Image (cartoon, rainbow, N blue to C red; front, top):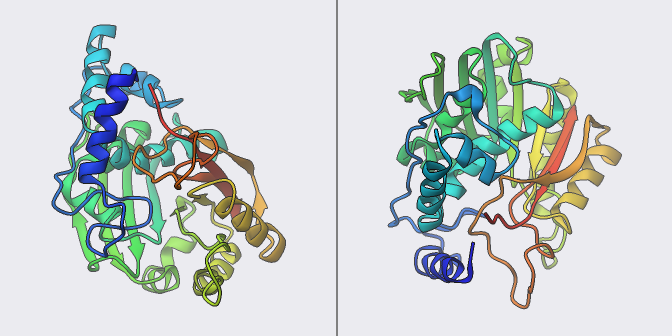
Length: 314
């Protein structure tokens, strides 16, 4: 981005993003106000096999049939940064699968189940209901015949059966479900998923490793998560965790998962190139690299992967 584009983007975020956390549109790192219409990415003009998942720039350009078309798409995204934040969820999963080699892009599967934990009606569910962003999972996993996506968390609005989802000419089926409850509640209701062999678990910005909150509530979130984490690490399912930063959340989550719960890391913590565009940088922060934005990826088995994010730019 040049300086003019950065000013425009900054003005949009100031106007449409909730920086105060008033309990209405605010939810963790996803801060777009409820009265703001989230945007979807236009349909691709290139084949899904050509999509490049190394960075935001390579992804957008690879979705188009020419460099000029790619430049126009990037310009469109820069004018509405909610596209970045909405796509961060599915593309972070795609990147994590790629780096961990647990689910290769060329894998031919009849069915894959993706379970996202700690989800909220104000973030992951809102993106599902208002945009086509989650269907971009089908672009990465174009050789998988059926993808079942579960958004799970106590802060979800309801437990609901499959949503109808569009697909980017992949020929596969993406079925999305919501579940209101903890991960333990979810697996009690879906015990067959523990043994079907085609299941991965995702945690977006769970926050259980951040111990910098003021006392006496410093460890409350960790203690709330602990029963679920003990259960999850006992399942031997691949667990992918994304953290808000690399200076608090990531360090705490790696310590907890590895030293206390015995998770085996298959990928060391690393930067996630598909970070949010709107995450708040603390007052006085002078550089994006000092305050990484949306998620460390961490994978463990009873497996864990960690990746941390820095500010996106083109």
